[in-house]
Image (cartoon, rainbow, N blue to C red; front, top):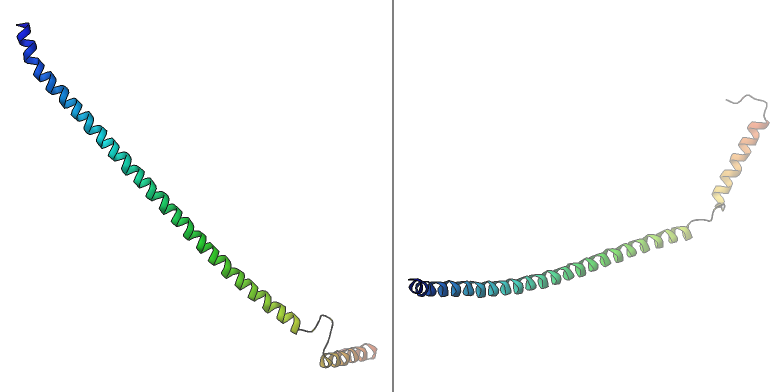
Length: 117
């Protein structure tokens, strides 16, 4: 009875072993497919990251260039205004005349005997 039982279980054992080996092969295939997909996703993510970094660098460069142009224009305008304005301490003829008249009036007030109004 033992030999009969052994021969009866053998095909079942072999079928079970075949199923286990097939499942293992399928798992290996699925694992390899997952590895390839992950590698592909990683490659795409790195490429996207590089593209984003390059775009950001271009934008930063454009902003920096625009600011340099704006600053240059502002400095040029200030330098032009400085060249056009009279130097500190230099008075125009009309301003000198007004100042002289103001000094004369003040001197007259200070030297007079009258109470200031």
